[in-house]
Image (cartoon, rainbow, N blue to C red; front, top):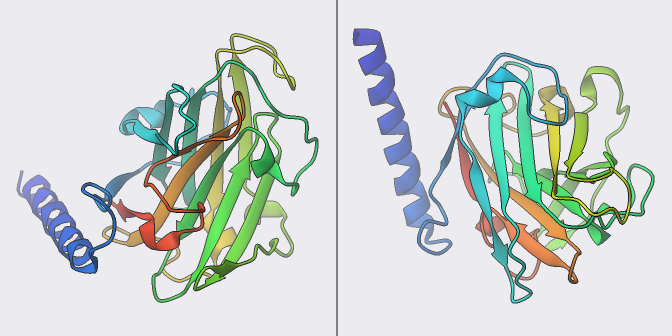
Length: 246
């Protein structure tokens, strides 16, 4: 009982401190800086359909449409972390898979895609970006961003336990470019080994990372969805949200 109470009090102190820090920055609109608690899990197998029991440990986070090109598609994400890396599960309502690219490290953002940005320390304006298409092609890059001037660099020796483990699945249709569907899912695991050049890696209880999660859909032009709204570009890192690790 005492151990549980201590854990609750520690979490409350961490969240209160985090909110105070973000309030002092004065960034974002109401709710923009509310931290997302990332729960800890045991490592599990990536299947592309979110079937692992580990995903029951956390709830869905909704992405909201940003911009005037409104399209009413539900997009939601789950996030977990383990001793070895961080897990993401995207669930994207859709009607058509707009995807023709057949290879990794291409301009995936020009077609249907989900994206994650992880900025592990505000003292270091470099973050990790990961993109995954419905056809399971990926783009992992480190992005130096100096006052809005940014460029992506591919990881060196991207192999073995440094590689992102990823898979996708489709419901209500065929997994093919142009197919009529009801939705698709993207599931991936980013190992800390890949993020090692960045500060505050691996995270521990109470660690804060700035982050954002996105989706782009092309059923009716480019429709953009985000966890925390940005201005002009998804690389508006000053408007990223905050992950707080449990």
